[in-house]
Length: 480
Image (cartoon, rainbow, N blue to C red; front, side, top):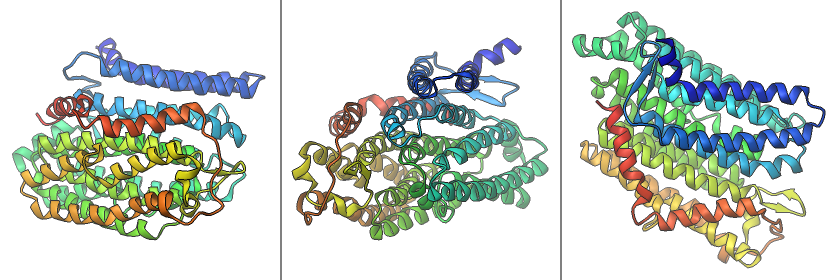
């Protein structure tokens, strides 16, 4: 029995062992910088290899520890996106960390531990397992947000993230305790059985609301988004890039897992919560980003708006909605990896410049980079025929098919508002006032990710690289 359980959780187990081994090697080694560099590259390679291993593993659903851990197509899809997104940001972060004397062995070790927590979150089949994964991820992320110890802003970001994250964990735990109190179990399948037989009582509904609130914090959905702009701005840029990719997928997939696995028979009860979160996030993110001067804060509000669109797919409460959520997350991570490859190289005379105004007439300085960023901005805005448009199209059509036509209309309006700040960046690069702009060079690895993400937004129009059908199979395993 135990050997079966271990075979199901083997990737998570091996990653945890690797994280602890890299910590020990880092502590005992004399050549800190060389070893830290080696651990960083090893972590990135292991993420890629594990992503391929999980993605190519046999189809089907298997469980471990009496259903507390679920390995199905939905979890595997989410894990592949998280691992490859994390590997990309790991490679992109190396030059920044070296330049700012931040390349420490703790950085890849903490990200590996966060990744183990995220993988646990998307595979949780029990409220206890979910909380364990969530806290492992959160505690690691609090530390790397404050990783730049000589920076007041980084320390402030870590502290804000910790305080608000602890509040959200408390809300989630309180919700979990209410759910346990009214159903007598923490297992998702058992909760689902109680809901099917007895319906949703008032107490259970309160538990569901608190659970949703705690998870909305983690996914940075409005009105529980308040930590996001400050943490994005204050954290070191590679950390911000990581926050914008893998943890977003983990939080959204965890949301879907809880709602469909435990409360799949109570769609009408949680649909209205998600509709509110979706509309609030789309409009707040789209409107608040307009006045931003700092590109990291702009990306923070952009992420809030995009999570609103992702939650629209989830609000549909259907298999098509779950599929659209997965497609949206995969496209969103790809776009963000490309954008942060650019942001990491926004420099003047070796100093990082994060002001959007510094992009004035950037197309004359580096036409190739400007074109790649322009493609990514068009895609983030959801302008056809780029792949970003199809991400929005899938969630909008899922909402329409589920009868939420007014939600889809609200999404289109929010998308039009949000297009302004993406198009403003393109306008500045090609038609803006020439300022004392950027003059930093771009390492080859960053060029590959920036150009690759931009190319994917154009070439993926043909068949989305097969993501649509893979996401469809993954969503079918969640909604059974």
